[in-house]
Image 1 (cartoon, helix red, strand yellow):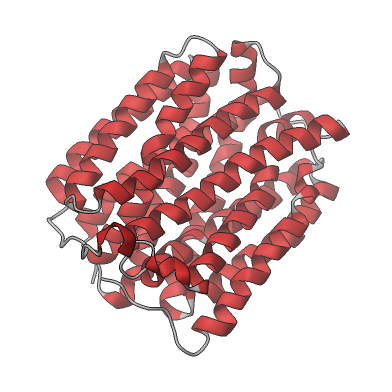
Image 2: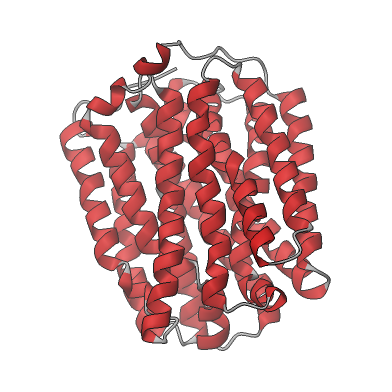
Length: 390
């Protein structure tokens, strides 16, 4: 059983967060030109956002006694404020600061949202509930990011971020009206929040997420120049190309979420992340061909998002007594991976002079992450299953 109205309200927030995170990648060239910097240096905009996520997520530790709905309302308001700041940032460093501020509510929203989503569903539908919540982000990549890219190219990138700020305001109202009061988490005290970290499974989740993001994101962070400067697409074509990328994310998240209700989440995440390895190899060799680049991009974004709902649902079960911290840590892992990937990808491009090199640079990193997730499945979930946290 699912509370669809409440889950839809939560998804509106991930929709806004999805636009603000992925729009930057789709218009990286536009931003670089407007700020008067190189594309590789503009990668700092991506890293600044991800750094904000890593700083904001741990703040959940100090909000563990707050009602979950109230906390979600505060985070929705922060989405609105951060993107309004971004829309009016005048130059490079202020834009970096604005991206940092915009990232502060991201990890906390996804972390608390995963907990609330599980509480709005029966135990057998936990994976699907989290997938619906995350689904807002995939819809953003399917509709919101292409629209934002179009607005940026035709009118102004500043207007695109104003749209995100308005989405944050709508999210606030939707959560206020549609999300019911849900039971809070048992307060285990500040030290009690850390007890689950003495076990191995959470670290396998965090490690698998971190390494998977670094390996895959070092490629996707520079999808703009790969498509325009290598495959030969015009900048105007980025709008519909982002639709294709968004469809991959949407399909990957939805399919993996439903599969994790039927199979072990770690097994699903392992298979999805492992699928990225041949995709990245093929992109490196055939990404200069337009049709191949589009198809491989779609499958690549599906693998990028497919592990999200299984692992975010997983960590809440493994973090008994420290659900807030577990939810924060997995968001730190995701976005620390993004920040490192954007920086490493830029360094690889500068060192090699090729926009395609990041596609294969991250392969061994992805492979290690796959091994960690498989170990989680084989030793902890294959027979015993995942602990359930309500």
